[in-house]
Image (cartoon, rainbow over all chains, first blue to last red; front, top):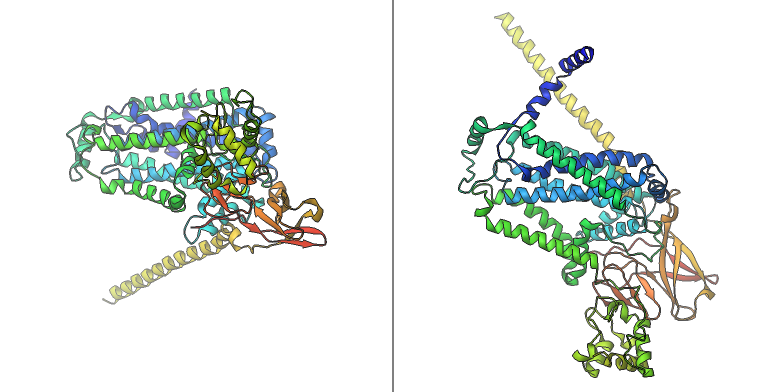
Length: 463
Length: 173
């Protein structure tokens, strides 16, 4: 023991580790920085978990367009603890996005972005988008049919950038089509380029926390005044500040450890997402869908008016970044208490409800044709008339049931036809079917006259 | 007096040398960064620097399709890398319009590039992602697609149908 202590003393003396870390560990923080402050450090815990599990996965993963799928099958089904490793990395990414989101909302609601912590907010915004970029590129590394087609969808989105859209799309795919370069580039983005920028901003973000101090819990009637704030904060710390370790850090460590345990538990219980079909761009019977954190955007693309969509795909992210970055310049002083900033709270709730609603809609994807719709059964056809039965069969054959619901079968994109005869007359039905609408093809050129008559005969029975 | 002048001259020379070496060190650093940066930038922009080749690929025999029929055909991209494996393949929807006329549609929805399916009985192309629908001639029937399905050039060569490969169609503003 004595020898070890002596060795440590020598290492510490020559390297200056204690001298370097002590001021960081023991820097004073305001009292009352309690549980609402743990989400930033939990994000950091998740990042460390992602780095460690990511390095482990890179030992098993083959970043080649032709071999990645097989290596993923190997990791998932054959490698010792490979399934768990993929699961932890998957749920770790989800946890990191949740934590960074909560951290950001906490900072906004308590106005911790105000003077002198504007740069903390700006670097935090960039870290949020880098985290999402890591999530998305990580999903593409899950190189199955979903990964291949999601790459095309991402390229299409980049294509909406004015002037350089096509070049950006080509750069993302590594060529004109999906091919040998595509996965190599995503691997490089996910493992080298984005993490390098991420680590740089994490270091900068943490340095700012030390430089400007943790924001004190806001108090009504105690506005931030840039002229006096720094001196007030310094005096306050000298008077009532407590060392970060152990007085504040224990909560961060406890919550961080609990987060990691939750991630591991989810990985054990649910495992990683199963791979879909092999990554063959010529295989088209797949339904590409992003992981949950991009589902809200996926929904938005389906729901917004097509006329404005191309502009929104480009301007939406640009405006979001600009608005978020400009926040500390618009409001850098004054009240921090949420009780005096009700609009900030209301705005945050609106954003959360909006994003969550879009997420739920994305889960249901009612706008997608339901290719698995089954033909109507005798029980669904309230008639023995031959024409009506023929109409019911046509409704399935012509793909109407992909989008329309009748009793317990069919898609949800179009109106429910269960009791359509109560709402529309024969003539109205004919006009709708023949001419179509915004969300319905005109079947006038597809159906024969007798088929149209049969379908209307069936629909007339739906009362 | 003379010694002072010499000292000042020496100081001036030293300062000039220092300025020269500062400029030299900065200049050389910039040059080395530039030279090292050229291949790095080249690797980063490689997809843009490469010429986009095109090739005619045989996709079916003339007898494979009846008039009016639509078939999914697959083919190899124009310039597949040796390590691309199955990702070097693409697909298209081929329709026989008459005895001698064919139309080949890209499988990519013009909305966001998802793979569209041909629904034979409905005579429609349908996209699973956001519900885009196209008529059999590729024009938009409903949903969010901003334009008709992109078409590939098709030709008949020695009783075989050939498609000219093309980039993934990217919809721009």
